[in-house]
Image 1 (spheres, rainbow, N blue to C red):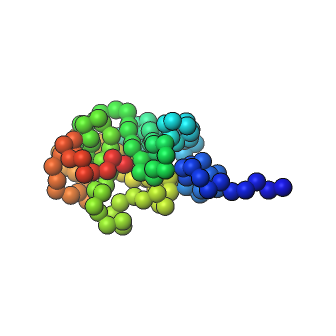
Image 2: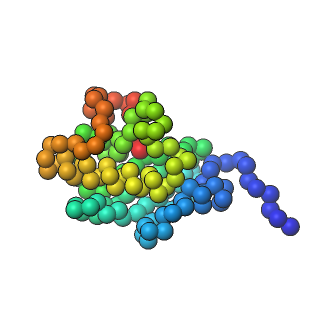
Length: 149
């Protein structure tokens, strides 16, 4: 007898939805996912920042139904695109959906955005030049309108 599909609870508690979200991430051989009831779903991985150091990334989808992650990374935190607590600020919440990551894009796309962001940060630390798109705004350390993704 087949088990009924779970409808209640967060997306990461439904195997099919979680597996679809994680699709294509096999190239990250060190990627680990862990669910804790009161914490949420956490992914950790070591990502290669091309021409720079490898970094340990932690992506947290807080417990409940949240599909918006918080992302932290080891190593230097000086960056114009970090929150005061060190979380990455990768996209502006008011951007069109084509300019920001959305849950339906999947974990593989999110990891790619993180790698690109970490490269830009490392480059910025060397040259004071931010490569790629950027919105003029107050420092994300002071501006709570920015998504820490």
